[in-house]
Length: 163
Length: 155
Image (tube, rainbow over all chains, first blue to last red; front, side, top):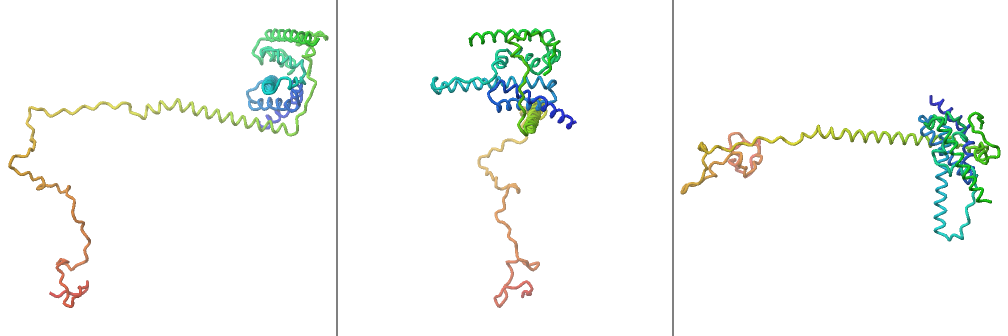
C-alpha cells in the first residue's frame, strides 16, 4: 500500500514537476524562486495526499496562489525600499516574468483564474474542471469565456500603453 | 500538453489571447535530491497535523467531560440539617446550675478526673533489687562498699 503510494508520488513528480516549475519560472524572477514555489506546491499536495482528488489541478492552483503571494511580498518590499531611500535612487524594477502569463494570474479574480489554470495549463477537460470546482459544465464554459474576455480587455489596454 | 479541439474554444491564431493561453513549453528539471526533501517535509507536516488534531480532540473531549465530572464529584449544596430543639422550659433541669453557695467551699481540686492529671514525675528505671526490699532501704555493707548484686546482705 505504502509502496504503491510512493511509486505513484514518484511518477507524478517526474511527470509534473518540470512543467510546473517551468510555468512558475515564467511568472517569477529566478529559477530558485520557481523551484521553491513548485516544491511548496508538491509539499502541500503530499501533506494531504489522501484528500486531494485531482493532484494536477491542486498543484497549479496552489502554485498560482504562491506566485501571487510572492508578487505581493515583492511589492511590499519595493514600497518599503521606496520609503527608506529616495525615489530617484531606486531604479524601476525590471519585469523579468512573462508579462502575458503574469497578466493572466494577476488580472483575473480567483473564480475565473482557477478554471483557466486547470483547463489551459493543467490540461484538464471541461468535464473534470466542472467536477473539481463543483460547477456545472455550462458554468465552467461561461467562466472561461468571461476570463478570456477580461484578459483580452487587459491585453488591449496594456498594448495601448506601450504604443 | 495535448490539445482538445472539442473542448477548447475557437481561437483566431492572431488573437493575442492565444499567446497568453499557449501551452507551457518551458521545463525546469528538479535539483538533485529535491524529491526526497519534499517527501520528508510533507511527512513532517502530516505528522504535525495529526498531532494537532489529536490535541484538539483531547481538548474538546476534556471540555465536554469536565462539567460532567464536576457535577458528579461535588455533592452540590449541603442539605440543611435539622436544628436541635432547645430544652423545653417547663421541665426542671436535672442538673441545676452549680452556682457557688455562699460560705461553702468549692473544691474543684478535690475531685479531679484521673485522666486530666498529668504525672508530675516521670518514673525512672530502677536498678534490680532483691525481692521484698525497697532499693532505698538497702543497707550498706560494713566496709562501706555498696553491695553488689551477688553479695548477700547482712541483716
